[in-house]
Image 1 (cartoon, protein in one colour):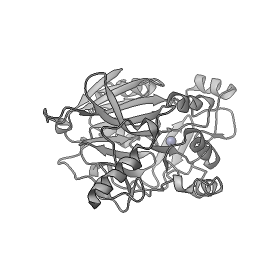
Image 2 (cartoon, protein in one colour):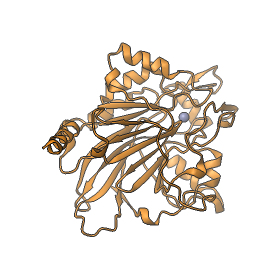
Image 3 (cartoon, protein in one colour):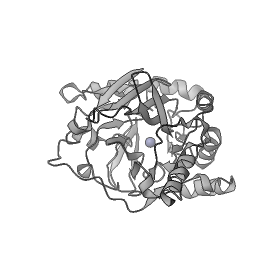
Image 4 (cartoon, protein in one colour):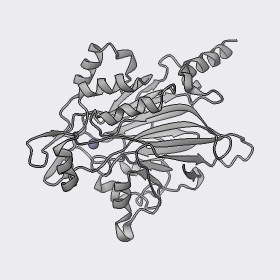
Length: 358
Ligand SMILES: [Zn+2]
């Protein structure tokens, strides 16, 4: 397994324009996992900026996903002759970003890594991404990014958090694994796309937050699956097979039913719509799902209201948490129990709450 050690105390400023460190952005609303948890019993935060951009913070480490900081009216180039117009503003601007220790990039597309981000981001910021995006990010001559790590499907990297406290026996650690995904449905179109390179290859992610005793021992404490910009494809069926008996606490699903003109074709949907989103919930069966990437561009044709309706019809309403831009979601990364059974989260929290009551 690939390994990376990150020391948040040395991460510096996230962009070339930053002159001072900014505070972690304040949230409009906080939602909790489980919904009746007490905020003081949580130790990790996911802050929603917009599109597929979030900040995941835990144990002093901050990961920024799919950075997109364009504003309403700005355009993105999404392939030969294909563009989109942003309809929303991000919760914070690029220059308001707090300290960031790493970027997780699902694919090299401008609604996930825009030109502004590409210009301004510090070159040495570690980026974990696809082999295709690595090539692009490292092929910019003097402006190349210098710490890019690529993962294939089902390949993992273990990110150890250097906390400076040598007394701590168990080190916080994050295992990130590339998950399969495809923007383009299999068949003749996929072949055409391979030739045209119109739509880049994508990764989903499994992010496991946990603790490691030694180099080879990792114990998961909270498991997050991020779908990436994929359609419902057969390859996704391998995920529940590989993680059989291992609870998936949270899923971030890229919705929107993004529809663009395909190569020599009238229209082509390249991300999940409401129907496929519900199918993915049924396939992955996470404790909770948070939809993201749903209303930020004019090419996102499947509105969140469609997903809400489909979720209601499928009887899955208590399994979904809706975040607006500027909202945050807090949860507890368990320590000392193997989450395999899936009862870990609520069980441990109930135990804690009981202790508090005494
Ligand atoms: Zn996208």
